[in-house]
Length: 232
Image (spheres, rainbow, N blue to C red):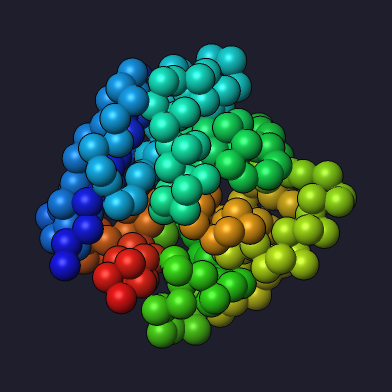
C-alpha cells in the first residue's frame, strides 16, 4: 500500500523537489507539497522537513522556520506518534522546535561542505533501519555549513543510554574515527531519533541517494524500511 508523504516547503528550501522526486518517481509513493504557512498536514502518513536554507538561514539555521505555522501542526503530529524525518535543514528545524535534543554549530572548518560520506548504522532497532539488511556503511551526500552536532553531557548520556544515535560518520568499512568526521560533530553523530522513535533527524541526504543514475541508492534503504514498517 502506498503511503502519503508530505514535504514541507519553506522559503529557501532547495531539496523539496529532490525529496518529492525520490519518493514519487523512484519509490512510487503518494507525495504532497505542504506550504509552510498552512496548518493542514492533509492526512499525510509521514512528514518530511527537507534540506535547504529556510528563510536564508539569516538568523540561525532553522530558527525562523521553527515559527512557521505548519510547525505547530508537525509538533502535534509527532507528539501523537506521527512519523517525521528532518533532513539537513530539516534536522536543524527539529532541533530548534524541540522535537529532538541538541543544537547545530558551524562546521569546525567554517566552510560549507558538499561531498559524499559514509554512515555507520548505530541502531538497527528503529523503524527507519530495522529492515536494512546490509551491515555495510551507507553512502550518501552531505551539503551543509552548520552540521556540527553538539549537546550537553547529560543529554549526550541520555542519547547513548536510550539508543537514540542512529547514524555516525564513518569510513567506507565502518570505522568511526575523527578522521572521517566531516564537520566536528560530537561523537561523529550524523543522525538521531527521539525517545519514542518516530522522529528522525539526519544531516546527510538520503533523498539524493535514491536514483541509480546518480551512482548511489542507499537512501532508498531508509525510506523503504519506514514504508515496510508502516505497511506491516
